[in-house]
Image (tube, rainbow, N blue to C red; front, side):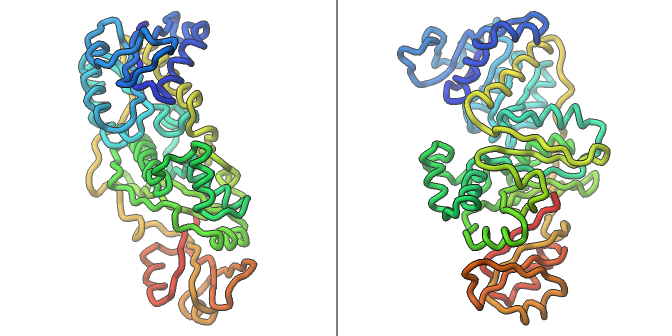
Length: 405
């Protein structure tokens, strides 16, 4: 089967490499159909590349080639990826992607177009890189009512927090090392402010609960306000700080979804996930907690998931997979601050007497070098709006959610 790849960056070049290096085993998984890359779309030149004869700068070379049945979109961004993908699906070609931004924003439209044209739109690589999560969530856990999902969904932020926790580095020092190692972009905003994790939360929430969730519906907070003082206090509590995407089922008509730093206690499977690794914990009513762990990015791990989708498309050439979700609505994702109860970590310039007059039950924390006018504590369970009301007259330095995963 002839296939094409759009975008020859880290992931796209990895897709071509995986297809070629597994040419003997892929036909055994497709029922005898080999994958052969016929076109590679990229506006850049790659002189001397072994695939130089396959390159094109004209999208129409792929769109109008009746031999090409499956296309891997590894371009990134919404445009022109959205326009290209829509045209391919309407032309009767299946498309697979690692493009989380596109799926989070336009997934519903693309899935509907794929259905209308009897083809497939698959995106296993868009959430966990090389971690299988889309298929397990939609197939292996299909018998479960999903109660919630919590995920470490961004390797850059997890690396930074690991350096702060284990090496005592400041946020700025850890970010610089992440950039030097190539884990963080020159402009790291999408990672450190949680936007990347937010897109992945949208995809997971849409799949788990059947209605499209858009990034604008998911309140997102990054890790740039986390300090070594917070890390030290949380260590005293027997936990670590992680950037978590969290999704909670409320009822058939509503869910809560948010991204923020969170205190994860050391007994959790998520607490031991370090460096650039990712993990997704799914809580089902029948299975309990199951955790999917592995490299959340990288050339070959992500490419392996893209090629797996291409193999799936080759197996379903004459039929569609039952896969996707329906339309959402403006009120589907509720304001979690007034509905979800949890404990909170609070650090403030105050004293215990004042804290005891405000809160009925707190757990005080200590750290080396703690100033006499600074307190840190874990609250009882309450909503975030209730917490804000209680601390409105305090000189608060930071607050962090405490997760129950």
